[in-house]
Length: 96
Image (cartoon, rainbow, N blue to C red; front, side, top):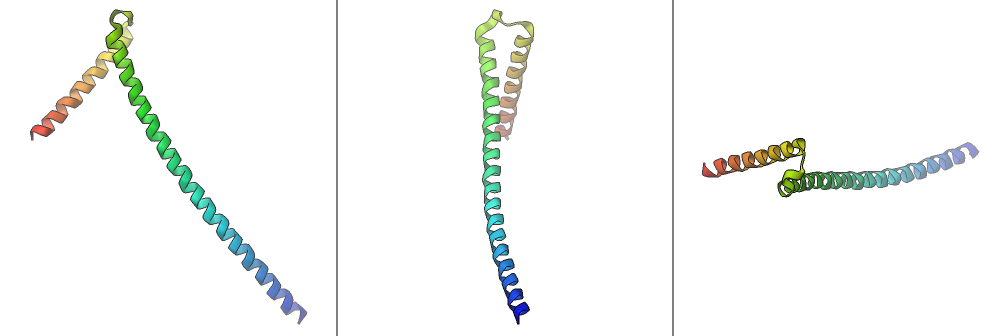
């Protein structure tokens, strides 16, 4: 009789531990989702900041004129050519 009571007590403890672990798992999954969303948001912000940085470099290159070295001037020219090319492609698509 004693062993049956011990078995019931052990089973109850296992069920309690199982339920606690299930709750921990649920909380960890929620935290994982939140962190993934935060990473995606940070990545999007980083991409936006990179674009803005490139725009500012181009604007600086246009304003600074002779104050730039050849490499900076060449990079600015390439960025402008790329922008113009993208605009031309967009216009072609709109014409169709």
